[in-house]
Image (cartoon, rainbow, N blue to C red):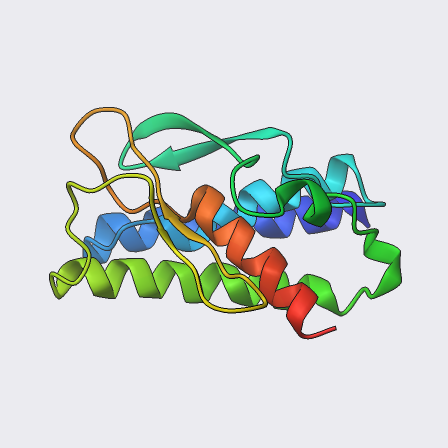
Length: 158
């Protein structure tokens, strides 16, 4: 089961890269999901934000430490077994974060030169991070931000 999920997530990441090369779209559609899947395969009893996940972004391998965000320690201790359906909300959060950062940056609502910007809404707190990338300036990254947003959406919909 774990191997099957990991293979599926790797395929999603591959689709993201194919989309990048064909349409010129940023491949983060598979990035955050891949990071989440690796942690799920390693620790099926809980999701932890304390581990670093390798994130592929624009041909540069960067390390997004998924230990950031308000309430990260609390979130990391929620067992998956409590509600397996929440896994799908986590994935939904990834896609929402991806499209939000990409569209917002294209429309000029989120300057690409900003890094470490945090958007917070009233409870439940939803944090979306624009993390610094290696190579050039800053670029909206949903590797860590998408994971945090997805986890918090999952908690909200329980």
